[in-house]
Structures are given as C-alpha cells and as structure tokens.
Length: 387
Ligand code: MG
Image (cartoon, rainbow, N blue to C red; front, side, top):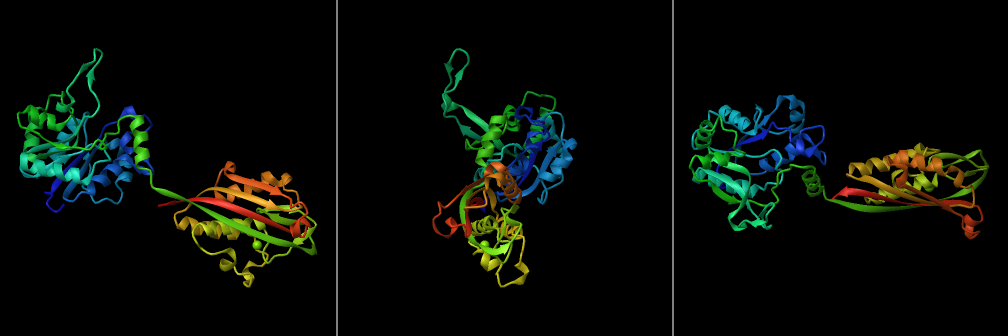
C-alpha cells in the first residue's frame, strides 16, 4: 500500500465509557492482557503512512495510559475535555503546525478491529476529496419503533471511524460549531457546513466496543490461537530388600517398610509426570536430562526434575491445564494419602486441585507389580501452547 498518503492521527480517549461497566474506563480495560486502547493503537500503527499519532486523554488516568502505550513510538498525549467533540478540538489546536491540506484521521479508542486497508482507503479519500468516513452497509431490516415503519436500508449507513479530513477543513468545521454540542462525529460537522463527505465502505467487523456484550465479543475475536498437546509418561521401580521408614510418591512421604530401588528418591509419579511434560515439547525423557550416571541426582528429591521440565515447557510458551495420574501398586494404599498427593501435584503444577486426577489400582496379583515387587505410575498432562 505504498500509495497511501501520509497522515496524522488523533485518538480521542478521554471518555469514561460507562456502558461497558467495570472500574476502569473501557479503553483501559484489558482483553487478553492488552488494553482496548493498545489493541486499537496497534491496529492503527499497522497501516503504512502514519506520520504522527496523538491520544487525547483525561490525565486522571495517565498511569493507565502510560502503561497502555509502553514501547510505542507515538506523540505525547493531549489533554482532553468534557465531551468527545471538545477533546478533538483540543487535539486539532495542538496540531496547529499542520498545513491545511495535510490529512488528519480521527479514530475511536474503542474500535480495535479496523483494518489497515480501510484506514488507507479513508486517508486516500480524505486527501482527494477533503473529508471521508468509513461507513458500513446495513443488512438487517431497519424499522422505526413502535409502529414498524420500515426504512430503506439501501439508503442507510452505519458511520464508523476513522474519519479523515484535510486539516484546514476539519479545523474550520470545529471553529464554526465550537458551541454546538449536537454533533456526535466530526464528519457530521463538515457535512453540516455544506462540504460533501465521501463514504468509504467500512467492514461491519469494525464495531465500537460500547457495552459489556461488545466487550465479550471483542474478547472472543481477540482470543489468541492455541493448540492443546497431550504428554504421556510412564515409570516403574522395584522395591529393594533394604528396610526403610518411608517411600516418596507424588512428592509426599508415605510410611512403608522397604525402600524403593532407585538412583534418586524413586518417586514413580513425579518421574512419569516429568516425562509427560517433556513429551509436550518433544524434549526427550528424564533419563536424557538427568542421567543416572550423574552423581548429582543420587537420592535427589524428584520435584527438581518436575521443575526443570516445567521450566522448559513454560519457556516454550506452554500453559499446563490438567494432569491425570494412575498408580499401579499392591501396596502401599493410596487412599489415605490421596489428598496430600493431589495437593502437592497441584502446587507443583500451579493448578487448582480439581485439575489433578489421581487413581490407584492393584494388579490383581498379576506379574511383578501384582506380586508386590514393584510399583508403577502413568501420567498424562494437557498443555496449551500458542499456535
Ligand atoms: Mg524412575
């Protein structure tokens, strides 16, 4: 879009937006970790041709503003006024160094879904015709309430922003209507002055976040794309002949008269969990990461293996959402320790306990586990990653 004329942008953001609800003005409310204002600014700045951009704010929210624009290369904020119209007027006056033919766009802080191509079309039309606005066609049947008088939707448009103007023309309109508070948009003033406003077809997607319902819709549309991966881990250890007081299972000390045969603490649940986590990022297995030949891991507390695997998963952008554990053992009985093990796994994984499954089964005396010579665990984890 190299033929987009350069343009300047004003973003009035001094209002309260009380129809959305919440403690903060809507432009400072966050959607998926980013303020509405920032979503909007990122959309505007994705269009080639932005020569300058100023946000008009209520200084009461300057901390929220600065947080929202962190790292952006934009002009300093302009102090707003009581109404949107007066705020835009302040902005126009601040940019008095512009030439009459310079193009200036005004865009609502709560319209984050504007596309770069539409912005560019609006700027082009403004440069050529003096005034332009995005205007969406209407596809619903429109009637007057309550008598159901149908209006001709072919003749109707839903006015959006950005609206674009030659600077001199916009300034003239604002000066002319300085004391008239009837206008809800800038193009309306230019039209009332008798200058035609070019209607550039807008997308219905470019809605203004006005109500809590709009906020919820915006949240759905801006949801980051994720994929869920499942990791599987299995581990088995023999019981030794050495007498002991406790064995370690799921990070919890459980009274048991014989020790587990293992290099580390022999915690089959945490070893299977470590492998399950590594499985979600294709990172090999616990034996590769922590070779039994390495004396550092002798009698090691197996939570360190889980923590290392977790750190790798999180570095890869993973967000653990669930773990399910199955233990196979004739003894010890898991039931009395279920709550402690579940709580420990929840703490390790940073999950609520409802997202940890734990079951145990005997092997009905089949095989070595059934003969009480060994115990085993299987774990599956579900992890969300950005797509
Ligand atoms: Mg093991």
